[in-house]
Structure formats: structure tokens, C-alpha cells
Length: 113
Image (spheres, rainbow, N blue to C red):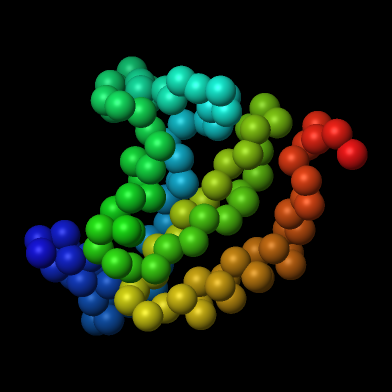
């Protein structure tokens, strides 16, 4: 209940906040074979970073989307955009606009053709 109320305060229409923008992941992409990293910038995050920044949207029910935002050393970086309740169409429009202005590759770099 407290998390829902906190998110409602963030998206209070009087404050004009439409989106909360964060990284999708708090660290660079990790090897698919694992293990999940557990330390970020010298801070122990426990069991790993998988979902650290994305799970709150699942808890408070605000719609969120992760969109490609570039790469670092050839590894993908995702940008998470969280919107106010019932703003799914606006989030999809934002993702479409970004994709049109910065086309995303159809396959990952280095993928065999």
C-alpha cells in the first residue's frame, strides 16, 4: 500500500510528471551463462541485479517499457520508462518515436547470419 501511495505522489498531475526514466539494469550486460553480478559500484546488492530496477513496476502496477538505448563495449543498454497508470499507449508511442529516430538492429551485433 505504501509503495502504491508513493508512486501516486510521484505521478500527481499537479506536479506534471509523466514518466520516470531509469536504466533497465544497474550494471552492464552480464554473460548469459551467469553468474548474475551482485556488486555494483562497490555496493553489495545481494542475490544479483536481475530485476533490481524493473521489479518495482510489477509491484505498484504502473506500466513500464524497456527500450534499447545504445551499447557500451558492444553490450546493450536498456532504458526503462515508467508511466502513470493507464498510460500504456503513451509509452508505446514514445518507444515507437525512439525506434524511428534511432532504428534498432534486427539482430544482436556479432550474431551469425
